[in-house]
Image 1 (cartoon, rainbow, N blue to C red):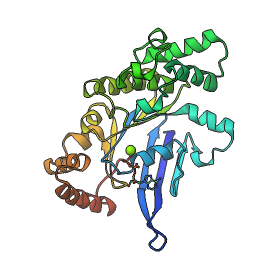
Image 2 (image 1 turned 45 degrees about the vertical axis):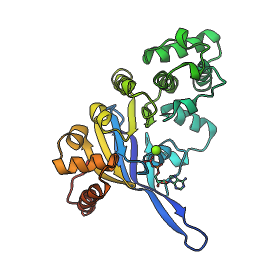
Image 3 (image 1 turned 30 degrees about the horizontal axis):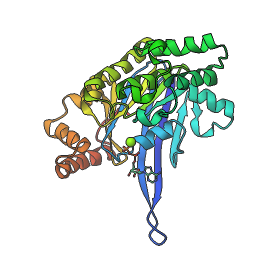
Image 4 (image 1 turned 120 degrees about the horizontal axis):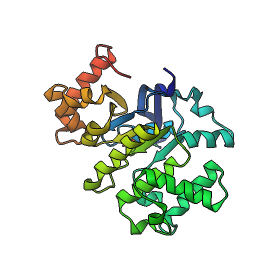
Length: 288
Ligand code: ADP
Ligand code: MG
């Protein structure tokens, strides 16, 4: 297998405390997983708020440097990408989708501008007709067209439509990997499924691997190939989505749900700590 993305014992700590009580908090601890370059998949990172998901996404995107371990994309250490041209080539292959589409698009800028400037920047297109064609093609992949989007502003569209446009923009450079950090949490519940279903289409039709980050177990169960569950920076469970989210022991799946959306955090923490202890001592099998 050749690796699209490989994380080896990745950690990220941040200094905390004041002048006299300096310490470190470990936002991500010893995180390892590999995505296969030949087998596009939806790899989901599930976890409650503060579990280290965004820190992980930022490290994969090269926006944050791990304090331990290493991240390789197509065999290259992402922290050693320095030159402008190497950085641009990397960004073309690894594209982000952010949580809040209303923040991602400036309200005073028409949405087509983002598509056109991405086509110019990454594809080097200059001719008006070619730029239009690239934008339209990307929009068609998400069920829209340039005719529908041209001249429109973000306030004229719904969160769901804006996330579609964000996905279209991300597709223009021809990425191998899309890192989507809570892409549906600002989207109307009724539209969430149509956005996550889009990820499936991208996987199957375009061969794009998706890292889907969420705290929503139901969409995770529905679309993921593999899942890792993070809790306070650590992976507490990893494997095939159906095995992890389908039927682990009743008590445990309840604890996971509670850990992600806490109604009974105390019970959840106890059960999770037991699992963690077992994982650490090597008794539990991980799909890492
Ligand atoms: P999630 O996306 O799962 O909600 P984050 O990765 O954003 O979690 O954060 C994980 C932990 O790391 C949190 O406790 C957060 O406060 C901390 N953290 C994240 N970024 C920073 C930073 N730049 N400085 C200090 N602490 C941070
Ligand atoms: Mg986050």
